[in-house]
Length: 136
Image 1: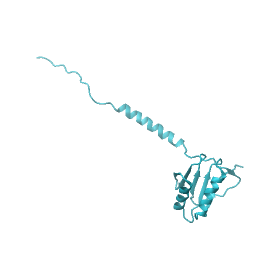
Image 2: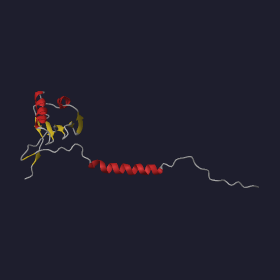
Image 3: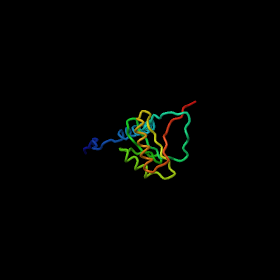
Image 4: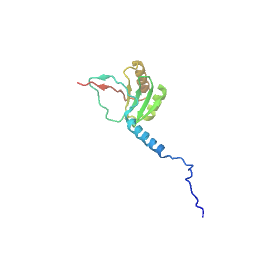
């Protein structure tokens, strides 16, 4: 009787375990680093005393590069033009909802006043500017 010697045949399957390990490591890295990035930090001007807002306002942000965004209920949406910004603020506001404008201190004064004027002329009466309070 002849004995047959069986050799290990090569498998035609891909080993994906190392790829899963790499993906899990990347996921952990992104989960750790994502909270470190704060989008849209605005360098506000400072004043001696500022009034505190009691109602959750609608916030209009004007970044240092001149771009606009609207923050409502914690959600920030980028806006491309002043007219679109004013119309979205009108849709989101009620008579009791204040609208606050946060503008970087390097933005031209005229740009901020233009936004405030458009908000007033569109019927929004509670408009304020956001500033940082000086320490001391």
